[in-house]
Amino acid sequence: MRKVIIGIGGMTNGGKTTLSKNLQELLHNSLVISQDNFFKDDSVVPADVNGFKQYDTLDALHMDRMMADVGSWLEDPQSFMMSRGPAAKPTASESTNVFVLVVEGFLIFNHGPLNTLFNKRYFLQIPYEICKERRSSRVYVPPDPPGYFDGYVWPMYLKNKKTMEEAVNDIVFLDGTQKRETLLSTVLADFQEMLMVTHT
Image (cartoon, rainbow, N blue to C red; front, side, top):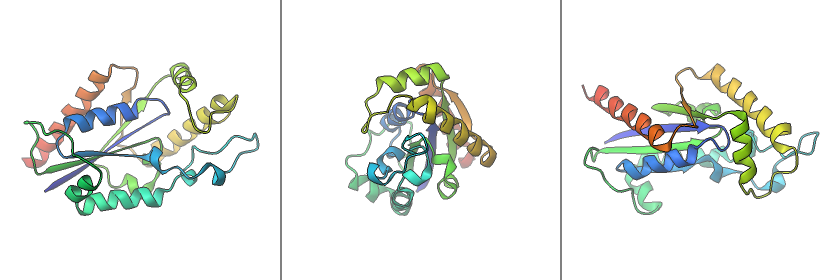
């Protein structure tokens, strides 16, 4: 059995979830774990001096629980997938003994223990204006307060990205403004090449 973990990181509203779900639909024996499912309750997330809730930090996430899920998958991918519901559709081009975990999130490469597990790392980027526009069209619980994007979200993205780039040097940066089919084919081609190289 071969186990592959792909990291899909990136900025808020950069297209991480869409790309990850598309990969799961095409790759046999694949599953997505999303970092967004591990946020702590709003009541325990502190606010900064401006009153903005500090969600864009690792401290706002139950990373221990996320790591436990990834660990359970590594232990027994088949059982873990069955516990999460039906597996993705098989495709003829995929070997049945390859199991793929797609981990997606905005801070997945900033968490050292998780970052060491990735076989491939991708980071989706979009320009400031598009990011702000997409963010404003989304409904969050709790909702973003006025000025939250410019006063907290964007500055934290720049800070977290700098920290990530200082710690990790093999990230493939992707243009999140490209068509989803283009992004998907880029990652799939990379994935197939990786499998071929390791089998030769």
